[in-house]
Image (cartoon, rainbow, N blue to C red; front, side, top):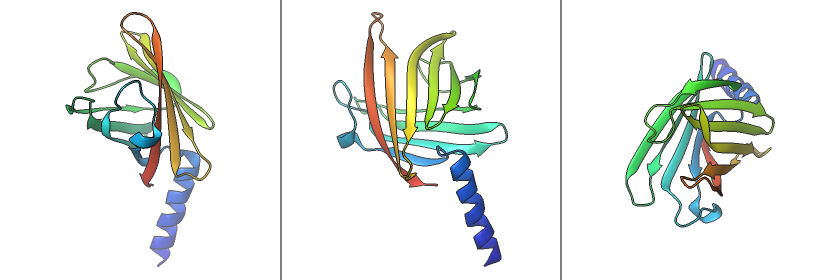
Length: 149
């Protein structure tokens, strides 16, 4: 019983310190994308010794599966991204209640991503400004519900 109590307390403290830790699933009905949103999007944030490990899985609009990941700290430094067709690095900053992520290719920011964690710990809203190939930008808003701590 004591071990269970200690485990729950540790999980609560971890969640309070890093509200992104856990598994998040996108709700397409509450999200806004130009055109059809990606499908079955799941974001997983796991604690790592110097920050966290992030994995995104899902299907593109045409049904093609994707998965990419990285391990980073919210310190503004660049970290390598593995498995993404467009991004090769990421930098992250924690500006409570926002986790600001900049996805880059060869040092140039292609997407500026703000994850806003609601106080209830159950909802995350991601607002992303994407730089398109023609140099213009577009904005997407994705609604995520927490699936597990």
